[in-house]
Length: 139
Length: 402
Image (cartoon, rainbow over all chains, first blue to last red; front, top):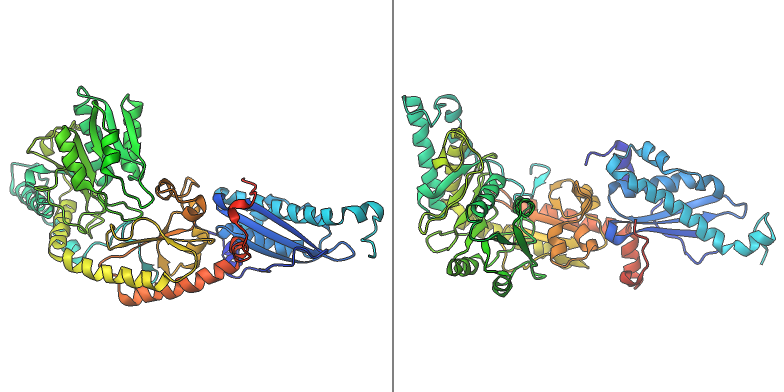
């Protein structure tokens, strides 16, 4: 498989590898894919009180383009609001990494991982946002 | 050391320089058509072809008249299976083969199914081997052909072909054996081995690509229908101008194999043991296929929680192959490993190392060190490894299949 230089760069020097404590209130965790399919992505975001993604981590089991796609989105989501991050499209990921058609599913998985992490974070804060849309309640 | 280090000898082998040397004059000086009976150019070429036929026959202890030149293993398997099935179809239309055969056998049998034959595909045990009881149970009154490979290309296991040959002979069933991965590695003696049709090819035995041979037994005589028609070459079984230089190369490669096979095997076995001993204490690694009933050249290992294609990228200094879906055009993991009952995960995580006569101790040591480092790195990156280390049972997780 001939990969683009960007895929190889992310594969050889993956950004933001690691894990946050998934029970942390400020952390949203998304895990997508299945081992049987050959790809599993875990993406975590840490969200500031202002609702900005201030940091992200990933771990991925999968081929080179799956690793590169998830590494790339950890860079992209940083500094974005949840809504901005949720708007990232798989086609942007595929274009940035010049993924071959057979690897497009890796970019779809990365988009799904962002959405899953955001949804996990929002679930944790569902009550507060209903009561106090401006931010989390002081507990 | 020359990089990337070649550990994929079951895919193909380099041509032995002695073989290449012997081939060259048959491209330039002795270029005649072996079928030209009217001048010395043709006579020279024919003499070279017949000498090579004797050399190929000698490696499997056959009569030279039992050797039919083909373009390689795929053609040999097609000729054997379609040729025998079609010749004997008035006796019956049932074929038996094994789920772990090479695609050149499986797809040929599938094609015959489309033409009205029926087929049974035997399931190997988790060690990769089939049993005689399984074969016995599958044989029907209308079974005309059994095709079982001698050595599996992915996992290197050796099927009990001698016993299968006895059973087929006793029942009057034609037995075809794909010996592509066995020739030059195991002793094959067609005087003792009751095989009727046997496929070999040059490029797995340090000969050139594009040339192979089919052994067709004369006593008791086995008949096949030709699949390629034309000038009646090879006693009408395979028409087409003979590729003299390729044939000369295959003959020389098989001659060398007969002389050097025993010593090479011993050295290669030691290298395989060195490779396995360097890896075996890693956590969560599994050998695919029986380790004992296997050619010394092959080691097929699954590194759990690491995906095969990303591992191949990480170890790009060594040239190996993987059962991972991502390295295949079909996006399916290895059908051979799946047939052994390996989970998709372990099939995705498999690497095939195949060692050859030019492999050195230094190359094996380099490969071991590289693998140990990169597997550690990829596991640090793997959410599955993290879950495994936290004691999560991955089978209990509800995965969203995509």
